[in-house]
Image (tube, rainbow, N blue to C red; front, side):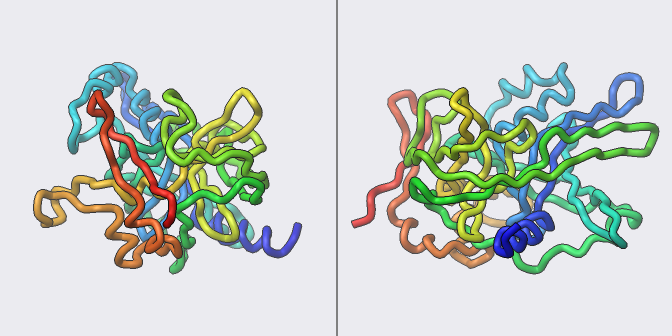
Length: 296
């Protein structure tokens, strides 16, 4: 293993998380649905795939139909969502548990933005040392031929016995090359958003995991394809997201994700180069989509 790759793994696995949903069944037993992967991008804030977040609606199947018809806006879910983060203590791996307190998932991309809080359980939290620095971003996708690294938790299993949760996980990192870039969308179906293709497939559970290029976060794993490639959601559409935050005290209860980039909470070298080139528009049916102009 080369030193640069090893350094990236050591740094990224400290910020990597697995995501799951849970609820109490009619018999009082915990229902758990394993989701995908996630990455912390700032203190208490993380990203996963939008479709991973929506799949957790199935945690309580009887609620799924009503949730899928839910009107736009801020609402509560009938299940809880959590993340586990792997920490090392005395050469032993442990899973630290986070509660997901809010989620925002713009329809223009397959990325979900999450706010989290540590579970108030000393047995878990006393072992956690959250890194003080996070990955820089590159908002536009890498060019064709560039090498990227995809990391995630495939095939995670969670078993609940009484109050004891047993989390069985494996962390996988894969190198691959970019083979296609879709600036606005690949199709009108699964990948109807800005994305790029990588020439390596990933296992189920890696969706929502981070993709790195030259030690910077460049995308979020969205899914696979019949051609054994992986599609990655580009990051720049997230900058256009306006999201509700009713208790923040701002006018209208809404803030812009781009403000995090503007203030340097999340750092991206290319933010100043693209912020005037990106915009959200609407098609004939009123459905939003995002576009990016060529640099002049």
